[in-house]
Amino acid sequence: MIFSKSYCPHSTRVKELFSSLGVACNILELDQVDDGANVQEVLSEITNQRTVPNIFVNKVHMGGCDRTFQAHQSGLLQKLLQEDSAYDYDLIVIGGGSGGLACAQEAAILGKKVMVLDFVVPSPQGTSWGLGGTCVNVGCIPKKLMHQAALLGQALRDARKFGWEYSQQVKHTWETMTEAIQNHIGSLNWGYRLSLREKAVAYVNSYGEFVEHHKIKATNRKGQETCYTAAKFVLATGQRPRYLGIQGDKEYCITSDDLFSLPYCPGKTLVVGASYVALECAGFLAGIGLDVTIMVRSILLRGFDQEMAEKVGSYMEQHGVKFLRKFVPVLVQQLEKGSPGKLKVVAKSTEGPETIEEIYNTVLLAIGRDSCTRKIGLEKIGVKINEKSGKIPVNDVEQTNVPYVYAVGDILEGKLELTPVAIQAGKLLARRLFAGRLEKCDYVNVPTTVFTPLEYGCCGLSEEKAIEMYKKENLEVYHTLFWPLEWTVAGRDNNTCYAKIICNKLDNYRVIGFHVLGPNAGEVTQGFAAAMKCGLTKQLLDDTIGIHPTCGEVFTTLEITKSSGLDITQKGC
Image (cartoon, rainbow, N blue to C red; front, side):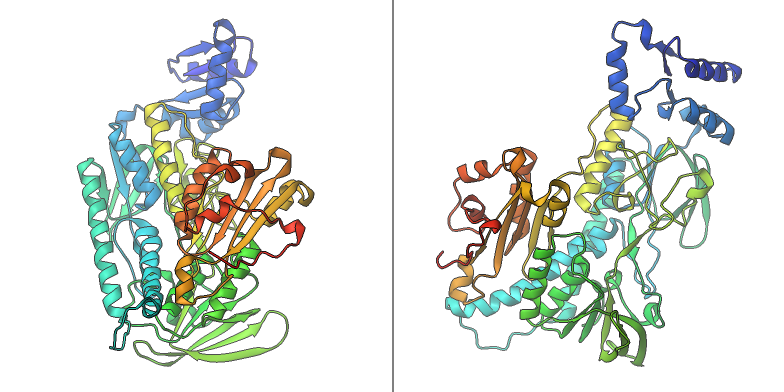
């Protein structure tokens, strides 16, 4: 299908190309129909292309004149001109994580023939897992459950103040916790497989790799290879933990890939890194009673609001987590084998020649994650990736530079690495591809929570980013400390929890940043995120009646601004 204008020389070139190939085309001359301008506007929404010619080949958006001729020279155009029935599947999704499964199942609901390829390459410690991706197996789900285990330990300590009496010594058993969590994850793995089967999605537990346009090779655990073809592909391969590249790291260290199914208690643990993964894992390990140290190269929670990040770290430090700031490991040496064994870690200062060494039972690396895009044959079909990060650049409809290949989830360049984002993007992509829908994934004002011992929830801009975008003089920051009622009788820290909103004075004091540090921060943040989608302002917050006594109500009574310099400590409930 060619959307053209009769006087456009580029349109003429494309028509001549298809004519020379003996291909019959449907041509709509937008300058010769009454609603041509409206058609072009809709095309612009769908394709992000405002010019003509605008070309579709077998339902795949090819692009304009230059991209069509490039595709012709590479052989891609000839592939696309084959009938869809020439392919084994309408859609093949590479990666069975949150985004990939959401896209595959939605496409199947819409009547398409779909395959999901999913294969977990074992970690250097030999850990692998079932269908569902990082979130279900080695991410959000086991992390939140272990965080809950730590919170229950705190609740036990609080309980005595509320009149509960128990004489026996309370202790935590790692093996009991991990077995229960792994049983739950196993049920989720089975549920995903069952859901795919019910929707007639073909699930293949093999490693997918492109061998040519529209064709992939799937290799199973036994090394057996099978090839499949599809009209369209979605890349949803996710990320895996990064290693330090020092002596002993892959031999003796673990990552979040290994921690949640570790068959023994990790004991005295060094967590390397300052990411949310590092702080969350360190938090729940300390919460169940382990000796935990965090080694930080530079700042905590890079990309998050730094005032909030420092408050998170300060709370952890006050509750027994040790921090080694401005150090990086240079050597990990095994002193004793065992479950756990003993490891010597040598670290060097980032600010001078000083080195330190210490002995730990376990070293957990949480220094970032790398996209799984370099070994799936993308270079064979010309899909561009960022050579430094491995991330894939896409347009606003998740399309790569190769028209029939799309991508969702953590591998996207410049997008948020969050499970709900991947799920939303995957579903909407399937609906655009196979149901004619136009809705795109909205990556703005996405809420998230860091499940550290004191949870940190946020939505919108950090204070640093807000100042960068709008300038400090155009912002008003309202903030307060607060004391959860549940903490009062228990005698827990007064004036530790903190709430902050950042308002744009030039836009009716619209809330552009929401931040809360306190219990159940995720639950609090989720509701306010919906309000921010609706254009929440400071006045709307003031007009809202709070639910008393809750933590969330503090946002309905914020009065003190940072610029005033007034005291924000709280005296009552």
